[in-house]
Image (cartoon, rainbow over all chains, first blue to last red; front, side, top):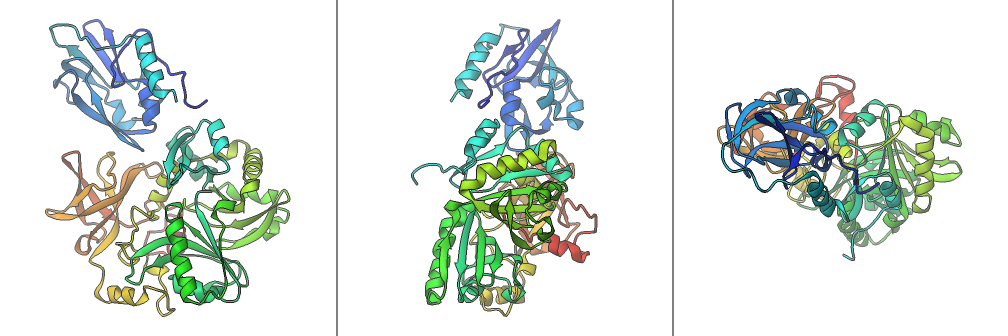
Length: 136
Length: 382
């Protein structure tokens, strides 16, 4: 059972090496933390969210998530403008643990025009990346 | 250091899927499933902690009391048979060597339970004082051969007591008793570090796995294995100090708010220094802080009024109080409950207020006003 290996990695998402997922939804992109990330953090108690309208730069921190144990930066996998943030997380930060790809989503953004991001991982590549780190 | 040590229950933790971290030189479970879930289980039902990393040092024989009284800040005249007292070991300058419990397990038989991180240095200190006293008793380090399980929570006694050969002999609060769990001899101490009722069970390391399994089987779904993560959130809600955070050689018991565990006039080492501190008043005091946001004020974060005021020593989100809480040292003039301060979290100031402790009070008596809180609080060793 230890270390846990059966992390949920949905096929309809792409993944960053800092353990965020993004999912294309028409014109916008939804973003959250992966199952592996929430499991490593465990017990999320606070999420610092950016303001709607703020601009995210790919590869840069746009907020933090705090668990009982640790603080972790949230890194933007793609550039864009924040369209919507999951306000429910203020009251229910534990949703990131309970349902990281569902009601634990963090924000939606309108991706910036320009060349497509290059450094995102497919589900299979992300699974390998997780296993490299969690295998001991 | 030859490597990380393991408690007798290490394989049980691994099998249970625990996340293990090094703590005080031991590979210890920080959580099994979730710190918050384990915390809530202890507050609402019962949890079982493996705290076998802690040290046990025994003084035995006619001179045991005279040695222990040099070492320990409490009046051993209060230590009637089967009583357990919480107190400090101090240097001559009043600096805290460790916070410990002392159990009287026989007429001339005294057992210190000490923090794992300090076990070696405590033993060296106790040995030097024992030498200075002329070695009037036996000094035994039982740490390696002793396991320690804490069963804590409102449901703890209902799980443990029926397993006792003689349930009527179960000890009252701050008492201990020799007992048998399915014919395995244990020392049952009605103490803990969670703010809940329950037991700390000392036993031979050889029986640790059997007793762990026995308790979990008896508890069924009502007893949850809990890790050091929940132990920390539970003790922080009670504002119980943790050595290395609130307590150190550079801190004395008075600034740490532990006056009631210092009995003056009994001749312990450090008493004169502490008398002077008492006369002048400590320049800094340990206080409880309630934050305005859910952000966590972690160890070392700066506290300020308009000027620097102090530093956080422990902080967490309190699962049972549903607020971000912290403990820290502040200059005396900022230590009154109600004082508004701010804590620096990632380049931003977050408001916080000095509040009476404990943060979590099961009895809901106002902290500081009820006599009961003095005994329920702090009187417990990690």
